[in-house]
Image (cartoon, rainbow, N blue to C red):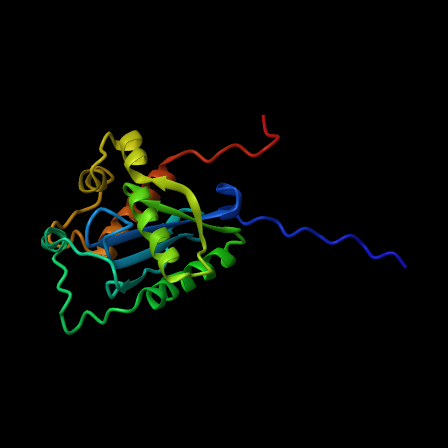
Length: 214
């Protein structure tokens, strides 16, 4: 007896919008600018979600403070900029692999929720964040990185196109949000502000035409 052909599961709106990729905002705070040499100190991720009206919104933030890996370096000037106190008793930093596991798990859950193939990193100067992420993944031999290895969405470009501003603080303010300089250079704060900027641009942009439509 012939079995009926399987019914294809329709792609979710998020999967259809980005060719099977789920945008996930990432921000890292580091011990310098050289991803091959300097330590990862903080990482935050914000999966992009859809509300009941189909508008792009922030998903749940996940973050971790990171113990500098053996062999990595920290430029004291970077700590002056970020305000990170490596010896703070409430920092509760995790080793690199544990920190990656902590932020990768909700990303994989969000990818599955939206029927996407994998995550794509969204960042402000996104390749900086991606390079540090990839270097950390390689350093600890992590085998379950949910992010595309080289493609990104960069809010520097999007902010410049949409608002004429390429500096994160100015682009966020141009999009109608407040900016607290005292909170800046925290991975969580910068990731969430970048996510708000990304969603504002997407929600203002007309949706792409449906294939086959006139």
